[in-house]
Image 1 (tube, rainbow, N blue to C red):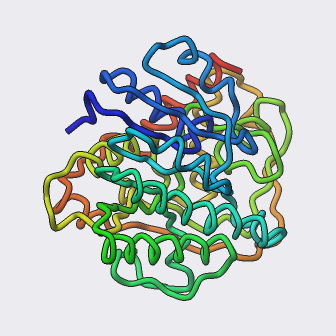
Image 2 (image 1 turned 45 degrees about the vertical axis):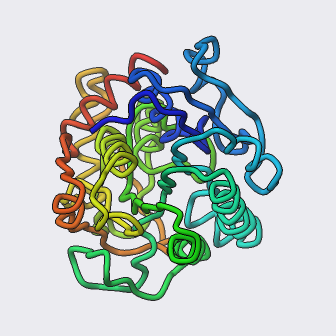
Length: 325
């Protein structure tokens, strides 16, 4: 099911995931309000939509309750993706991470409740699994968090739960597993691993893998994320309301395998890339060694059918990156 003919607020709209959601929503006949403070998002991600009569962009901060209230007015569905991401950044600056990810999240819940929003879908993270070693990760079994960022996402899930319990707000959480795709920036110290690797290789610079390369992730292409947001926002299955779901493809790839896949794929654009040396650095604090999702719950309750695996996703992403950078 697709979100259609609704009034939708996307927070973090100028970010990677948010801008992809805005595009999908507009393509399906919705009226969209995009909220972003442009701290980590980029207005150029929304350039193609700024003149669209069905899109309104608001530059504002979720830490301001008044802004949250104003943007939630007359909204049917909230897709909440505004956050300060990155485990390493949270280790360096836990206070700001807390202010945005917990304080801002609570503001959005209050504003959505007061505006009587129909459905509140929010981005959580696979980081909530913390030191839980069992693979694949199942939603009902999380461990102790390993970073301030992971703490904030666990708190988000608890706040969403109590708002559903106490106020009847229809909430659904989405635990993202290493999402990648178009509009994902390689810029900055805390950029995601795939765009950063691609950017360095195309510049004939050596990427650094932190650790020995054996750490593994469930890399998830943006199309799967868009599908899950649509399903979560439109489901009529009451058993799904108030729940949290893994958003992933359900396959594990080590960082070394990822690097080889990227180099092999980029070879079609630049044959010299295959000769670039890969560097190795120390393990980063707060990093989870292995991450692999069970997607059985999403399949059962939301009819989730992930459409794009790591290799097909890399093909699409690298083609887009080559054409747009």
